[in-house]
Amino acid sequence: MAVTDEAIEKIKGMIVSGALRPGDRLPKESELAAELGLSRNSLREAVRALSLIRILDVRQGDGTYVTSLDPQLLLEALSFVVDFHRDDTVLEFLAVRRILEPAATAMASTRITEAELDTLTEQLDALGAAPSVEELVACDLEFHRGIVQSSGNSVLCSLLDGLSGPTTRARIWRGLTQEDAVSRTLHEHRAILAALRDRDAEAARSWATVHIASVEQWLRSTL
Image (cartoon, rainbow, N blue to C red; front, side):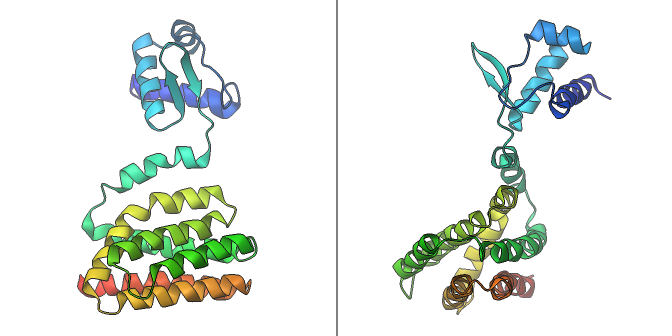
């Protein structure tokens, strides 16, 4: 194992075991290096790596702290990595979204408030009958993010947020090239919203699946 990897594992072990908790300040570099049996160089590299993935927060002049370790914070790195996807893997990202998002939509059906439903309705109404593709996709992102947030599962919400990059580009391309894409998307959004208002988890799940599958089916036909 590389020295830096060993240092990362040792710091990780301290966090996982509870020796270091969210918000805790790490001991001074010299003390921690001696405690873990590491060189200060390897410890420094490990801290740098763990700060990049939001495990540690290096505050100049104040020290190094364990972050909150909230899922949203930890999964920020996913969005960055996903943006390096190859074009031929977009279908795989859509397949993952097709598995996760309908489940989140079904969960939201019992949790989403009337006020949140009203907000989603207002967003759709503001689009009108013939929005531009860019307006539609922007609304699509906010529409689904609002629903997933209402599922009450922050991990699921962060995962789907992280996967949005490649699938967003696919939705824009579909909107520009498929004749009925805009009207179909608006219809599917209204159907999902109606199912949520009815508190019908299975209908909400089904319409969310249809919505994602229609993008997936179009993309398959273009490859």
